[in-house]
Amino acid sequence: MIIETPEVEGADGAVGEMYDDDLRHHGMVFAHTRAMAVNPEAHAAFEALIGAIVPSIGKRTYELVTLAAARAIPSPHCLLAHGEKLRRMGDYDDGQLERIARDYLDAGLEPADLAVMAFAEKLSLDPLSMTDVDSQRLRDVGFTDRQIVDVALAAGVRNFFSRAINALAVPVEEVPGTPEPLVDALLSPLLD
Image (cartoon, rainbow, N blue to C red; front, top):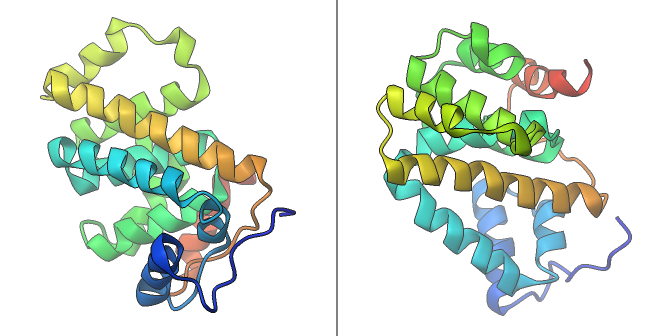
């Protein structure tokens, strides 16, 4: 990454808050946080958008959408970060998370979870091919119009962030505490 980022030591204001959040949760400041700290107002807008999306679909669905989009893009940064977030949430054991990371279609997920992941994957790979049929699949498993919009926004916002991070050549860092088998599974789509 060639951009110069704000130093961790002495960071204050919005940048200091971004860095403190990483330090508090992970014991380190990630390179992607430092890259986004160059424009903390844009980072705040990104976080506000996520804050407007998550209430209708819930954190677990948001993280599954994020994982599917990150897998399709591909974004090793977001695969690692959000795989670990899903692990910490505790809804899935490490074995099932590894199966989700390798092939969500063969991971024993509920139909609604499969539908949102397929939607996010398709949006990330070929959004112009999407039709009402794709939205109908979400409706058929119980999603409301608001939730369908928010699933699309969640996948879109992941594309925005992941593609910006990739474009800036931000170094990939493992998330502290993530078991090695899960790291391998999360990064497996990049090796195919």
